[in-house]
Image 1 (cartoon, rainbow, N blue to C red):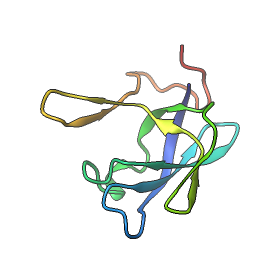
Image 2 (image 1 turned 90 degrees about the horizontal axis):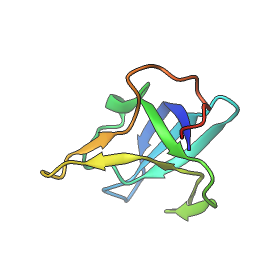
Image 3 (image 1 turned 180 degrees about the horizontal axis):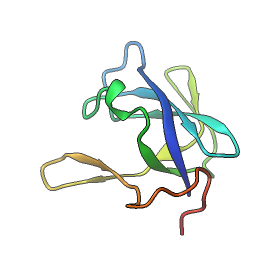
Image 4 (image 1 turned 60 degrees about the horizontal axis):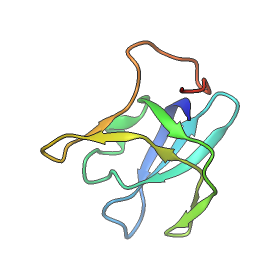
Length: 96
């Protein structure tokens, strides 16, 4: 797991739940497709600090290769919450 920052986000065409994210991991930028579009607008998450599961095999979703997964928590009401720290970690820092 690595810390990162969302650089850009856009809705995936013909998909109600998917956002295409570009995430800066410090040592590289990755495209990650995430099923969070029903919870967040693309514009509202740009600049958000996130934790990325970075060692997953690439997976195609709607023709877009996704290279990781954003860690989220879900509360009792179904609201998604980004997992991040109170202090800013350098992009690419290992999470343990």
